[in-house]
Image (cartoon, rainbow, N blue to C red; front, side, top):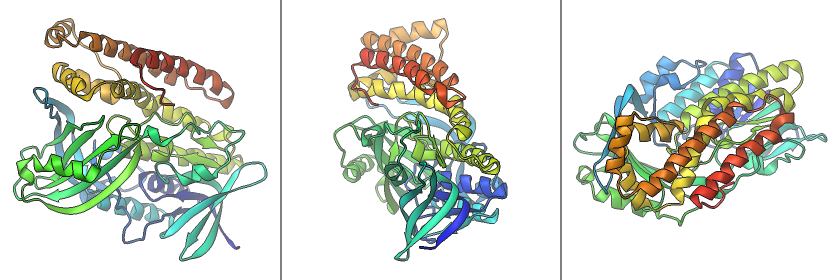
Length: 455
């Protein structure tokens, strides 16, 4: 069959795909995005829609245009955890965050990728990868309008999302690409966008509450009267009836009495640490395809944008040098791990510990721990308290001291694993010894928590 030739093929038109393609096209590469959705449906992805702001994104597209068109609420100043076991937990933000219109956001980032030179092929469903005799990925095979199309490329960027088909089809023998991936490391989520008749009193906040299983329900205001409402559960737990459970949560809130649903979508997302390595010969994974998602909050837009930008940068350099081997693109892994990767790996320890405990007890503990310290731990894996605050916390948490002592030990393991990730190797040859150091920390976490091994 005739093949279409490019310097780079990017699979998936989400955040990772758009930013990878925009980065490579800005550097002068011949790039194509292959996207299974139609052009009309581009950008329509299940998402909570909350982000920190435009500083989240690499400066390879017109970020002011993106902000003006897609950021519908730019005044998010606090997070509220609604606790049925006690007082609500409220944390003020240092700088305002935002909630966006995910479809419009998705449309714009693809428009911008195309504006800087990338081709986009919609309604193109990738079905296989192409590898040469030495194991290098040299392209993908897809179907468009009923016709099989083959794309040749020096590098394939996997932005296809959670449980990517590309990774099922690729033979990673002889590489360090992380294949220790299972559905139990993922979360199933569902969200609806609702129009309410009156402005909500939390229009400046992102609001969370617990679910029966380890997970949370969210209420994120795109505007005072347009609310993104959703929930999710860990796939290693008994399944929730997501649509029915969301209806129950919404029915208990008077602001939704006469709400009109304008959009419904579900998705799977990784709630695991980043892939140990997301690089193979001729192949790089970014965003959800590489586990670049906060494993506690499920926030994936920042990690996808940053990692895809870095992936494309290393791919561009490797292509220019005529060497797209795993070793020559390895520094991409180190950039990820020593940046947000170490934070997500540390946060994952709390996720694993929490999954081994009763949700009701966890919510009681949450009610008694100072909000900012808890928020710091769940966002970065670390936190600190003054002596006075420690004494106050001991008084408030009487009856939970055993679990809090465990949590203290988890915080020390989080510090250790952060150090391990800061020492991520700059070359593949040191990879196995790095994994052994990391796995030693994980073994101690499993022993402490009684949790089943996640990896």
